[in-house]
Length: 476
Image (cartoon, rainbow, N blue to C red; front, side):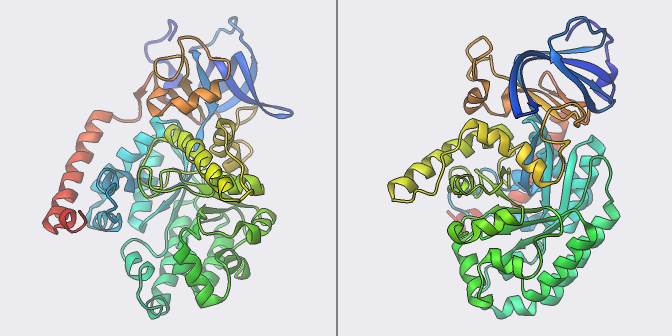
């Protein structure tokens, strides 16, 4: 950082400063454009100007001349608190529901601690906004408390049914369990609506409604959900056809595909709709409807744990359905998930083509960056997010694409491709609404070492409970 005040005001307030960029991914009239040696002027949380490098501006400056400056990355699907409780214990095929159920025994301080530890990882990997599907009402409130304290942009919602009762309904042996749960699911939807009301909307926080999935809903609950979505106005966040068993259950009970089930009950057309996973969607039958209704598919490359599965990202790209990227649960590294989206997408596309399925398109790094920025912003109806242009919100991340393991010692000629060799440790600066959250790799909102130590103590109690239940042995 050039000479200046010891604590420049732009670190914590939305002041005025210049970002000198090695590469800048910004918008021109034709769309996204990569330009070299640019200066971006930020004033009061907005981008005031973008121009070729200008050393004459008498303003505080951020030196990002060895970096690629990107729009802030948006995660289109998160359960923020759930990363640490599941990471490293489910990779041998263990089910993740029990660790998540144990979160229900935590008090507000512990919920805030785990939420903060996970959210800090997301922010330091360049993720400036999350579409958050909290597993319980208490977890949603914790997310809002932490995100508002730190000035992180969020679109929170409460998943219904929540993790307290989800396993019994989702993994039911008899559909009577779902029918009998209708009153409590409707009550949960009403509680999610009340949470959205109490949270309110402001410059950084806009609540949504959420449902777990189509196989844990009925016509009665979808009617209640439709009314709540229409009232709140923030849109709907839901898993859609995330497993073959979901599609089979919906077809058996209601005679429709999951996509048609939601359409039939009016869930499309009341604002943004984000559908996670869509592994069992019939793309040939439903892609036209998804496109026509403006549904955004959210691909989660690390869903289920490291290396577990692929998802139909290549199918969505081929079909022209807006395709975003989300962190989901276990990984909080946004750059790593962009890389996984490309690598796993190429593997899936090649396998599908070898099996005679031509309706796929292998993704590129350009696709992944678009999926984590402008595609999700467009799905939200927010042209001021997901792009760096004059008048847009100053949400951005600077990635070192010149340094070890990622770059070659100098600015690369095609920096988006260098992201395929990067992860969150390559992110040097993160800014949300003009305010710095990561500066030269240092997390600013809170002492990160103390936060991780507190989170570790909470996690040790969860592991002790799992050990006492012989959970590790039962699922060895």
